[in-house]
Image 1 (tube, rainbow, N blue to C red):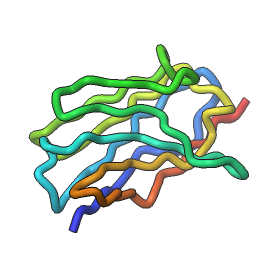
Image 2 (spheres, rainbow, N blue to C red):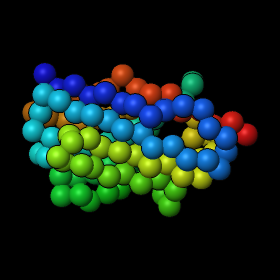
Image 3 (cartoon, helix red, strand yellow):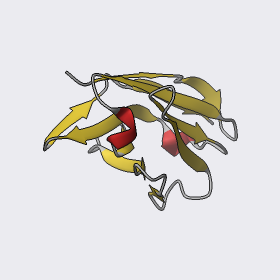
Image 4 (cartoon, helix red, strand yellow):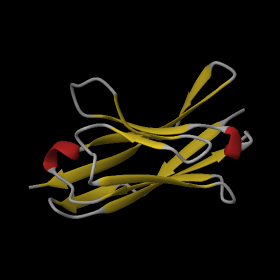
Length: 115
């Protein structure tokens, strides 16, 4: 059973930074493409960033240049470095992966950016 556990969320002022972590278990982590999504109140969940097994990254236009996704296969962990945070980045952030056509989500971690 794949489990994803996010951490690192919190309250930060606009312009600040946070680093989210997602620890994975129950899978051969190095073989998983990983992603970060977020869901703001009243809005649909949206893709933030992805990182492939080879380390290729993709970002939503709204975070490109401010956020960085990375992975440490030795620690079974994927990270999301968030810089220059804006109030509109406020959301619950979820870690995501897919294995054998099944999608797995973590429980989410709240990020709140005050203006």
